[in-house]
Length: 382
Image (cartoon, rainbow, N blue to C red):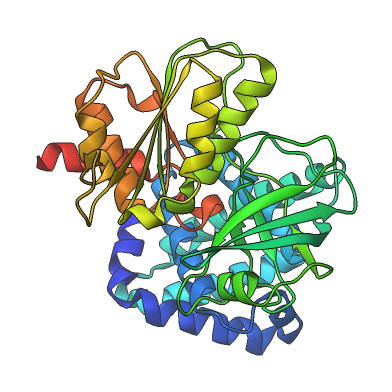
């Protein structure tokens, strides 16, 4: 019944989310300060989160895991236990308005119980997490370097130690777009001095990245949310690795390679780096130098939109020319289409889904685990 009700309102999803925020802020004005001025991205996040919860409704283990991540992540927004009833009240009112005749007393009761469970898990996760560390880390920008093509390397120094593993990502809030959080991966393993360097590409029309690339200077402050992501190395595994990086997606891949260098691991590792043109192969020289120093590391580059000496074509196509990869652990990072197609290529070569690792798309906490369904659907279609 939950899924049927979501299907009933999905054609009006955009109107539903606009209505939800309108009545939430009208009934509870104090909540407005928790959200960014521009709500476009936030509206999409609400819908994706709702769809993901309904998708997991008959999978309690993953539902609790997903809601736990949401609860922890929401600490940085200033969300409090007392906010959950207000959100639930307005969410159910919005569903009732747009579900029409499909909304019955029985369905209302089901949604009330379902939301109560979600709120309970999220609230408890936030309380537990508060015992372990802060909700945010204040960090000073110490270095800002333009790398061309709208990309900048931005190094920050948190005021207190920031715990993370190579391959994870962090959410960042800037002074130019308060309460608008975006996700970036450190381009290295944890450093002794505690600094983190992010590779940021300015997205046209974006609220956060253009300011980070074009306006940010040393001395300015940002805020970091807790590290997230499962694209980390299993210390107990000795499987060879295949890594695919597109654009600034090279950052977490480079961090994984650096981690193996620092720990003395010599797992056979193949890295594929891609871009549209040769001049956009950001960070390739650094990776090639690493491969010259370490016999276990092989680095190949590919471009899709021009003819050059070497490999031509998009990354998934080039990846398919090598292998086989069925014995490998795979790590993918970059644009959504590239990651999806590369995962298809690996699945076709016999790599089990559980050995294909990637960051979630766009909004990590809300879009986790969507890729396996996309790739499975694509395989059936093909």
